[in-house]
Image 1 (cartoon, helix red, strand yellow):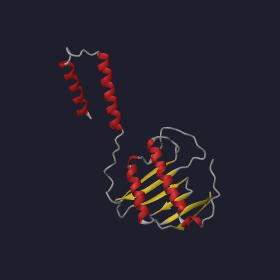
Image 2: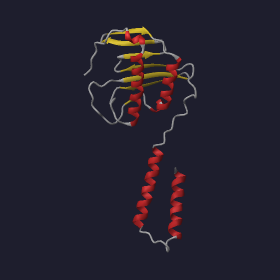
Image 3: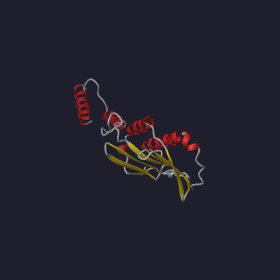
Image 4: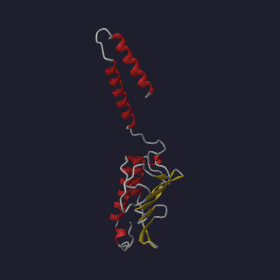
Length: 194
């Protein structure tokens, strides 16, 4: 962006010098227009979505994950092909749960779209919205022999762009789990949160 601003100021300077006698401009107007244009360029540049190049184009064979949803109400584990449902606070029920390659690809594509590597290990948005109950989430995944974890326990109802995207990701996984036939036979949870 440096070359762009240098080019802009150089062009502006040439215009001002060459057209000084033909079109006298007020300095305040010139400064205001310059600042407006510069601000617009900065806003455009900051909104360009870049995705890390650390992601393989296609899902790799060692891609696996463990996703904890809604304060461990559900834990989907593709490493072990299990699903755990929290029934009571002191006990969970774990069943065999085959994570299909199709679903893995869907999750992999979503993680790449999120640019999951930009999230820190303990993600906490700066904006705070208090909602009760408020659930925490977590994902641990392995990709190319590198294991990464993102825990999200604070401000999970934040309206920041990254928080909204991450919440949509976890909500889509939760919806997929709720639609699975394997989950239908499990007892209802007795957990509640405040």
